[in-house]
Length: 177
Image (cartoon, rainbow, N blue to C red; front, side, top):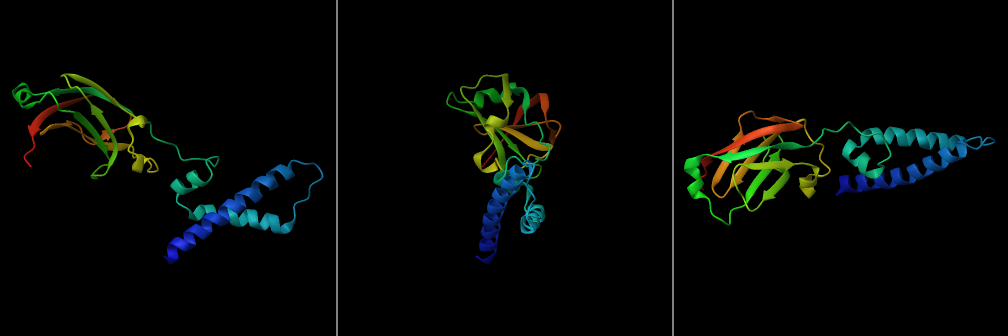
């Protein structure tokens, strides 16, 4: 509880500080303005405080601040299935394309494809990001898995380097649960 209070207090202080900083920036443009010493000190303290905040939170607090370079999140390719596994498919099956961080089970993006026909051309991108993962910075490499019913497939090269084009995935295994 104490750390949460400290964090919330810091957020309030930063919000007030950004307001002061914006007013200071505007006044600085006026030719006859001499900034008071306490305003300069509070602006310096705010700059130091923002260095202590994780970059994801700084982006949320003030989107105008310089942001880290982002990775282009787009994977395109074709999904196919081994001929001997096609008989296991049901008409009601949905193809799930799941992107996770390397070694993680938490999804960064999920795409559902229905109805399914093979070979299936797919694209998964920013619009498929999972809501809870929107604030998470994308790694430059991800794991991709594809599932339809009790069948799964992964690309031959893993992890996948973003952005990836023409990534072929073969559904070649049955998952027994």
